[in-house]
Amino acid sequence: MIRLLWACLALCVVSSSKPTEKKSRVHAEEPLSPLEHDDNKNFDYDHEAFLGHDEAKTFDQLPQEESKRRLGIIVDQMDSNSDGFVSEDELKAWIKTVQRKHIYESVERQWKDFDENNDGLISWDEYKNITYGTYLDDPQADLEFNYTAMMARDERRFRAADTNRDLIADKLEFTAFLHPEEHDHMKDVVVQETIEDIDKNGDGFIDVDEYIGDMYTAEDHGQEPDWVESERQQFSEFRDKNKDGKMDKEETLDWILPSDYDHADAESKHLLHESDINHDGKLTKEEILDKFEVFVGSQVTDFGEALLRHDEF
Image (cartoon, rainbow, N blue to C red):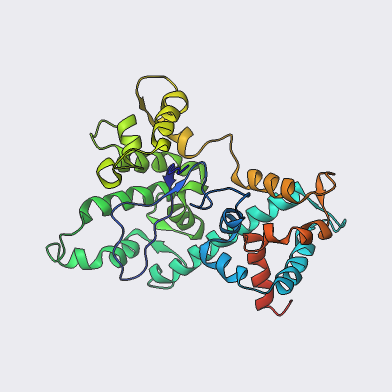
């Protein structure tokens, strides 16, 4: 079943590009890949969940023996206490490390675009001038987007990330600006942006029609599919906790950033379940290599690519 349960994700802006009018939102229940998670068909979800679409495709194209060889090197890196096993905690820690690595690389790429004076900081003025410079020079030049509203939204997020209130972001603050979903003090702005994106009648809440409308438009698809009715039931039974017919800020937060769900924990448990042949609660290298197709193309192998670049393969 298709599930488009969104939370606010990072801004995707680069020098001389237009900011997107509607910020993208990550999936809440299935955030790591839009693919169906059905291991009876394939492990594509797991591959994209850990590595991303492009990297997973690259690794999937390797010959089987080469994939297994690289995976064996990665297993040694995952075994942090060198006891010959990969525990669930070690697998979870590895997944989180790779996730942080992707965030770090994203920030580094954009940092170079916005730190105009190379002082190791990014001011709001620097960000604004690079992102909205053309509009600021000639507000009538392009009326395709509501740049005034977009700029105000970006400034609000920038101020929320700017913990010392000087309108100048260091690396940590800029990371919170680009990836607010990863920082507790950014939760309010994540919720606010999400509600603004979905709340069509402007009442500050998300009702069931707005909730469904963010995922499905009848005129675009014809007859309503079964999953839409299932989502209506999800809204009634689980999203709308106080049963007033709409989601408020707290309910929206619980929807997009549930405190009782850890994606890395869930994925590590899944990989352990798929690969633990003797059911002892930990993985040997042999068990992982025997089930290499579960891991190949995942973010676990992303570190393998990094090792390859350093001639360690």
